[in-house]
Image (cartoon, rainbow, N blue to C red):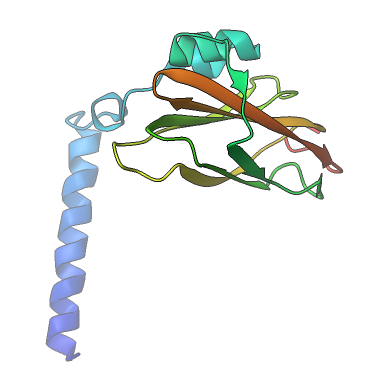
Length: 158
């Protein structure tokens, strides 16, 4: 790549970044207008039934063997616990990840489009040892499974 083309790309990026910075500073772009909808009640609920009811409209999830949680048996650092949830249930609408012993148990919720594979992977924060629960909404019904994860160094204030 020649020097002139590199210079033009740098100038273009600098001008675009400056324009966005000016728009934010002027109040033309606010996080509320830019970010997606956030179900605040669900993510501030202090208990699992309250979080599920706020998020999915019900809290009566039934156990399912068609959901698989891949997480370490022992997490050496609770600040970074890798979790993968997969399911073979048909018509998956959403997948929620919950850490039962966290002060705010709902960690994440993934809304999936029609035809999407029932698979999500993330790194979560756990304050202490406990169950990681996956709740899958499929065909309008809720299904769940859990896996115990032992934390040796706390991530949520521990």
